[in-house]
Amino acid sequence: MKRVVFLGGAFTLVGSFLFSIQDALVKWLSADFSLFQLLLIRSVVMVPVFALICFGRWGAAGLVTKKPGAHLLRALFNLTAFLSYYYAITRMPLVDAISIASAYPIILAILSGMILSEAPNGRQILAVIAGFIGVLFIIQPTGADVDWIGACAALFGCVSFAGLGLYTRHLSKTESSELMLLTGALSILIVSLISAPWTWITPDLNNLLLMLGLSVVALLGQYAITNGFRYAPVYLVGALEYTTLVWAALWGFLFFMEIPATHVLIGAGVVVLSGLAVVLAERQRL
Image (tube, rainbow, N blue to C red; front, side):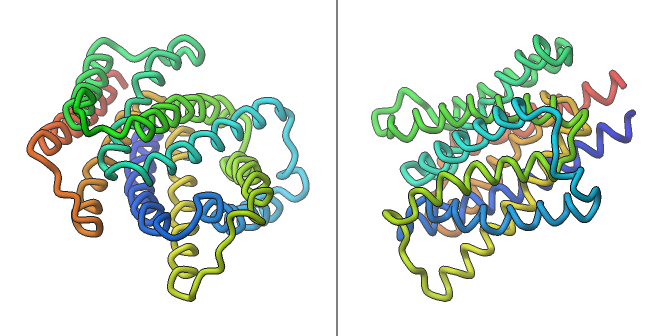
């Protein structure tokens, strides 16, 4: 059991790193291309890959589920999470948008105990709350220069990511990671295809390669995070995903000249320490 939980933690850390690269690429490309176009190419890469994996490993049975309703709800959360989150990234500094979205472990910690019977212990609750305080310290939401449209989009993404995490954990008991990722990618593919006639701009070779790189990174990141939810409790996954903030600060500085202020660095430190505290509390409990 202990090895399985820490395997889930390792998947989560890798997935968080990959998602931070994805976020930076989205922010870079969104200056010239619609979010729907980025999501279209992303899903065009993901759908055949996961469909082939499902069929190759389990045959036609790998493409069938006995829980279509749960898959539909997960796909809906997946769609709204990434649409709103990507939109927030286009309007706000990378660290700010990710900081708000990173509040979702608080929702996960509460709902996982109510719905999945995975209630965190007292120390883990305190650590998650400390992480959220670190997030607030980073964003300073009372500041006059906050883009509130972007902030609301990030907050909506936060709630959607919590729903996505809960349904991923719920379905992982009976469904393959690949099938969950396939249905999620299909929902995005359908919506982005509908919008394509109004949003498509033909990219040059360099931008096309960046879009394909975004798609591959997103594919690997989603696979890693989904397996994180498979092997570890949702509150543990949520706490470890706070590490995305550190990577976001780095990419924001390197590629967008977004220099983190002192309060951002302090808040990021609190966030990372809270994630480590959750891991240590989990290790002592197992």
